[in-house]
Length: 193
Image (cartoon, rainbow, N blue to C red; front, side, top):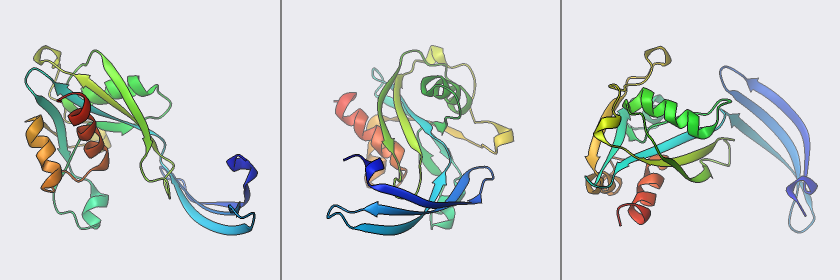
């Protein structure tokens, strides 16, 4: 039995659509025992996104970024967030969007970008799916300073770190961003082994 055979949407009410969409949804769900149960959820739709871990195998380094993230601040984080370059997808191919974000945020024009997996980041309330990439970088690929787009409010610092230091930042709490943790763990298993 597919999900569509177990779901009856009763009502969808848009609460906000600026710039993303927040909806109240009421639906009936057919439980495993056959019983129908009415449930209500708020669903946040901000579109899908991309994330990238740039790495240099020979130097054993990676590039991360550091920036202010207001939602983490209001949830108790009083530091700039260290994370991988990332962005929202829009209507663009994931690899093309990731190439654009790499140039904007870290100032590198990357060659062979490899998609390594896709994942829903908070499937209980958010529709967003991320496309995760890795790409090797070299000094001759640097085309600018990065920093993000001023008109989008980005104020990004680029960090080139030894992979071992970045990986240790997960354990000591300096890296608390899920997409970054996932890509660093991927690199530990598949790139810097």
